[in-house]
Length: 426
View 1 (cartoon, one colour):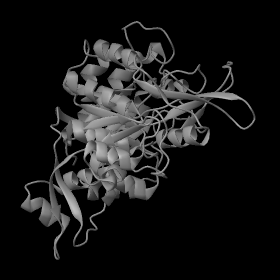
View 2: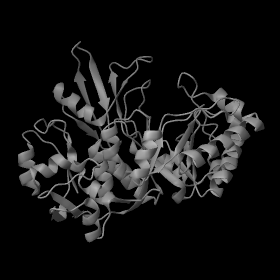
View 3: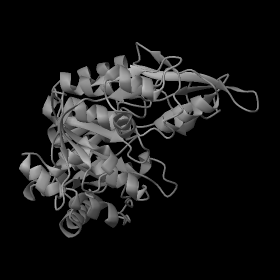
View 4: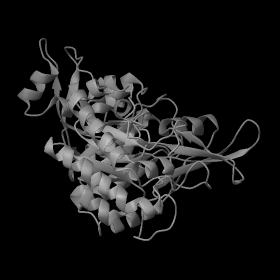
């Protein structure tokens, strides 16, 4: 795998000749919105097929996988032009194996809203071990509220991916509520009701585990929160399924702040099977422009977490989004969330060159909008994706977790596939 940074005068034809691959291969692996529009500073992922196969009459992906001692999921990952579907035709050339030598194995989890674009979900499922529809809500009395995620669960199971029930402390306005968690944890009866409802949903709906995303937990509730997780885990363990928790990105036990105080890493490590470190949103909608997931800060969180968790308990959080901030930054002026491919298209439209912060390991650019206002955009590309996946592999983590799958990021999935063997689901 190579990552090319576009220079003035570059074209796909020129890059194909430079790297000795076909233009079609570059288009397949990067899925450019418009292959004729390359932005200076943009990344181009280059992968090198080592073994290919030309489809014959009567072949299926399953028969090709069998004959080459591989899996259908691996073929789908290696041929992103299939977009997760097993529709092939005679004469089509499939990549069986790339020259890449994966550095290790990772489980991969991805959150998705129930309304995710279905073709996009189909294309991404081969890269997932766990699909986490976001999210079930609950009442203070412990009633589990329904989530219309049946189509996501069915798609996951059909693709060999484990659907995970996500429980979040969201109120009626979809805001994280400290008080909702406090009311739940103050009542043993409410906790018993909610745990019973969760286990019933797992039994009835085919989930393969539960992920708890309680954010802004009061510091006074930290111990009771860990106890709740431990009780829930007992019921899941009896069914052979894991419990995970999404955790604020802390760097010390006593880190102050409403986001951190209710997450006691030491207690939670004893109460769950896995934890997702939410190592993103340093750059956020209400803050000043900066990288969403700067590598030094991510590493600091990870090194602290490893004093409380085993490496095989941890998922490293990876963002699949960026932000567009109006300048000059003023508190209260919110940035707009932006997809990674969308950011590159915006740079083209506004004639902006993309730069790269070597310390943060993140791309960014500035542009002037039609109303004459300057903007600053930070997002993710193949380089920043590589840095985070390599970090997870360096520390021997169980996996990586993406927030979220609802926007396309083909380079990110290609980098992941090149660097790591992806653990199966189910």
